Image (cartoon, rainbow, N blue to C red):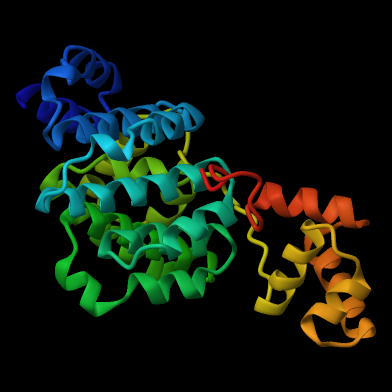
Length: 298
């Protein structure tokens, strides 16, 4: 579909009004039975994300029912794209643990960028660099994914106090992006931080960066995303608390001492900044650590 291809290119160029016009002109009902309806939804969700409307983008992405998706080879790639965007939308909304759950469901190469982004946003720049430096992944990455990963690495190096490495990595990202005219990945990061990292690069690189970072009002992703890390035993006890069990009941069920359960509960409260059982369960549900309904992972 030519209109869809042009809409996708418009989103990548951050020409969002043009993308909206093109998407509105596509007759989705006429595409039933093909992979294309899912791609229309995907591109529209991208447009909404870069228009500063991640909540609407998430709703748009998730409304495409599985029953509408044909089983064919193209589905695997489409599903991977959707999963990666799903994780990114959750990160844009600050739902770090929900995003982590989506990322952990798939080992597709396209999920590597959201994984590296999640680590960067949750305050683990060294781990983000490790993911972004995976040589095997680099061998199969698309130009856009390569630019995204280079930008993650540049920002991670900068936050690790390595300005020269950050500048060189950003220069590589700009060079790769300029060759393919990839603007969209630069909207994912704080403009001021990228400009600071870039100081000392040549004029053409600075000009491209100014154009790319000036195409949207602000970064798509938040500066920080909170992740709560629970051990497997803490997670197990948390689910029992959510089910209404008391400490002594949990101890009996898990064949451990009452005092051990109490210690785990205190650790859970501390990690969740909770002061009571109800508070802990409420916060855990908000973080996506325990489900609220079958659709809660959305």
